[in-house]
Image (cartoon, rainbow, N blue to C red):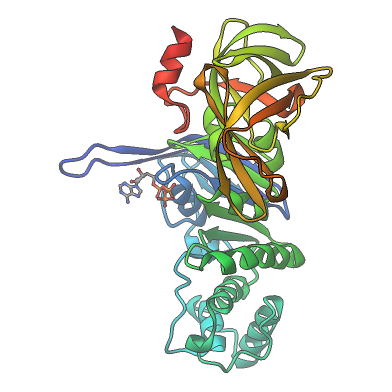
Length: 386
Ligand SMILES: Nc1ncnc2c1ncn2[C@@H]1O[C@H](COP(=O)(O)OP(=O)(O)OP(=O)(O)O)[C@@H](O)[C@H]1O
């Protein structure tokens, strides 16, 4: 439905500043009916990418194809205008006009297109769009008489009213409070899926991306570093950055001391651990062992490690209450603190001895990034490499 090939965008240098290479030969492909997220830290190029797809920003090179139509190609000198691309957009600030009714807000794009379809057609399209977002009957209300979540749905109805072939959403939930954001995330996914429209969704929030998307493109520094289903990136990150940005976890500097099949042995500050290995790693590589907080099987009694599992004993350094779960910091041999989660009802005491079983299939060894992910401490990296 959407194919982006080798897209480039550099913002020219401003007085006193350097040029910014915001998109570096970015390619991606979005299937019909999918919700596809662009996820990454601030400044990685997500919005630039979305705006290039929308036609609001002109790339320097590359190609963008929407359905059967090439809407941008530097080589073929094609540049279809934003209004001719057949897209719907929802922005972070919903841009709902307070002096207009809900129906007038939703009708606005139909009147903007220079081809006023007539009062009856407009009323019908507005009613259809409001029904899609489950706001039938709200048309005459003033837009200011709506909750934050309802305003968000009006913005969605307005994006859908001219029956776009692709929906673009730029951080549409970030203005809502945390609880409403959780509800709206589920609601928005259900709405988009029930309409069946293909959507590209920009967010810097991994929980949002995981909850809403069929697929995620993880971006960093103007590049797409990994694409896949959220679960696949979470379980099989290629790099420390991907592991850190998609989920939380212990990122432990290690070297690879043995390999066989897709398993490897990581030499870590607290011993040798068997784990799955990302493609391309070799014996002797400096790498990062990823242990998600929910990966260890935690017991207060020693367990017999079986099969491919490592057994480590440590002491509880701290316990943090988080409601449904607790976070337990376990001090391991060598002074390394590993964060793990436990059921609130099983809370151990601080100082207590604790036993961790680490099944090899739950842990993965990944590539170190040039600029390592925030939680891998440079000093530690240097220590293990030495
Ligand atoms: N109009 C512009 N002129 C110059 N530089 C820009 C312009 N717009 C964006 N940039 C720069 O391009 C890079 C990518 O910006 P972009 O807005 O695409 O990132 P983003 O991932 O959407 O970030 P955020 O999550 O903070 O919105 C950043 O370094 C940004 O400062």
